[in-house]
Amino acid sequence: MLTSAVTFATDPIAPDAADADLDQARAAASGDTRAFEALYRKHAGRVHGVIVRLVGAHGARAEDLTQETFVRVWRALPEFRFESALSTWLHKMAVNTALMELRSRRSGPRWEDEADNDDIAMVDPRAHGPALGMDLERAVATLPPRARAVLVLHDVEGWKHEEISVSLGMAIGSSKAQLHRARQLLRTRLEAHQ
Picture (tube, rainbow, N blue to C red):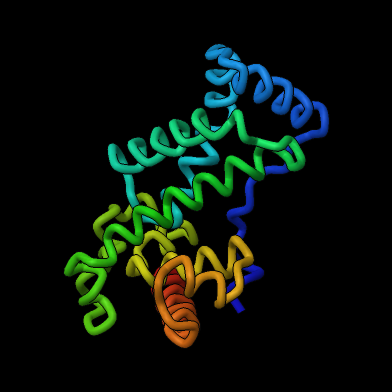
């Protein structure tokens, strides 16, 4: 099973750092832009990583979605209850931004057609250049969008198929089929590059 091989989890944050995060979040919620900027600098990389893994966006689009996440964070900070770690809440905000992006793509021809044609949404791993090699993260990035989203949400984020089906607007059976498909494609790609 691929679950044990997927190691995308964010780095644990030390208790002192988590307390500092909460202090900065309180200040930012009161309008302190410097505190918010410090939070952004500390967490932007993790937020960006979540978006890249879920959406498959790179470059300017991934940056735009990262910025969009932090705009939402800024607006929502006054309602943050400080009952969980800020990093957990930021992660959830990033996942929600990525899911909204995926939903907006769902009506496009690429999303609809991919169920019937694997080649439409695939990226040729060789296009990354031979010097880069094929690691797990790159292999996941080459998966078709729905398959990648289901794999990341299920195997990395720990979501259940029921949650995935609601978030992505698909039947539970489709979520299970996409997960199976993603694992098969991932296995094939990794074996081809060993």
